[in-house]
Image (cartoon, rainbow, N blue to C red; front, top):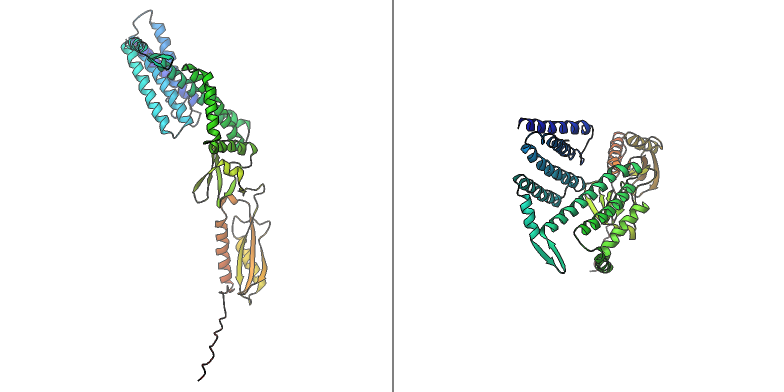
Length: 402
């Protein structure tokens, strides 16, 4: 027993050390290293390989009961870690993914307990003897369970490959976020379709029957699901044409905000005040959308001010230009300018114009700073901002005849 304990502890220590040495420089979550290195897939796989090697080395010389118990435990742990890390990577906020993970964990630990207790062959034989039929097809409970597990493993591997390619290969292939998004969507959809076909074949489903299903789906898309299909097609059209890109400022139905993400069915737009709008992709294709993001980030803003007719015009222009020049976000070139626009009924109407080059940081805050600075400057200079004045003539009724 002493040699077995030493071999098991050495295997765990070496596996943990190798996983820590390889994964300590890698940030974030990954399937191989997880969040804390030892909760990834690499640690249980290395521990399993080293423990099984120790079992083979010690078996000719002594009993290896402890190592025989450790092998199924590490196998179950590796399977659970693999499923958990892939589902966390692909579906980080999915409650259904967490439910699948817990269900698989119970099945894996139950299989390990049955293996250790020596009851697994008996249970498998009983499951093989349970037969049932669906139509003309005949299944055993063991075959159905093996098919479900095999199909699930294929789908999980497909998700893992698509997520790995999305995070690494596609990010290095192009610097455009929209192109990376469409490439990731196409890649994930293709791999999932291939994985689904392989999984169905493992379950014993005749793939030629899918032609009938495909015809039914086509009829459904033509009638009840045409809007849904249109949104999916429109999403790929937007990503391919790049008419809208992630990060653009757009206005849709008087809702103005930044494009945060372009999904295959909808586009997520977030307003500066934090509100989010989910816009179907078909709407972005068939209707007029204002794209407020320009190739040149220079934006011209203006403030209108009315002063009394008796004001010094040169002083008014100096005060307004100084108010705009005192704001840090306003550009010195082109310089702010104050111009007399019209002779209004209540006073002289000036327009102060100024330029900014960071519209993503907001425009209302710049206008507010300029307005406050202009108001303070006009008050300090003694320049009057007139109130609206109206003349009311009171008409007297003619005197009544006596």
